[in-house]
Image (cartoon, rainbow, N blue to C red):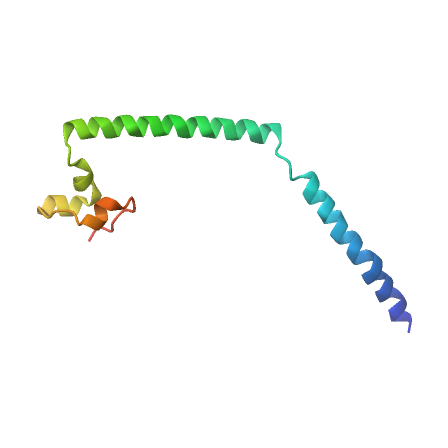
Length: 98
């Protein structure tokens, strides 16, 4: 009988208090901080610059060798004189080297 006096208030009061406490903490921390926003801006700028560099490299490679994408997909195929499969050139996923 004495155990019910401890368990019932614990379930009725303690459990909702813990749940509401963590909900409040979650809502408080849900907003983005100024530091996070600055970091995202820096990462976005870095990603844009890297994308620009990749475009420049692709233009240079295309000017030097128009078929560089086919050759670049699988160096083993290029060394052995085989042509790359159509699936390899249509996908950005790297192929395994045999």
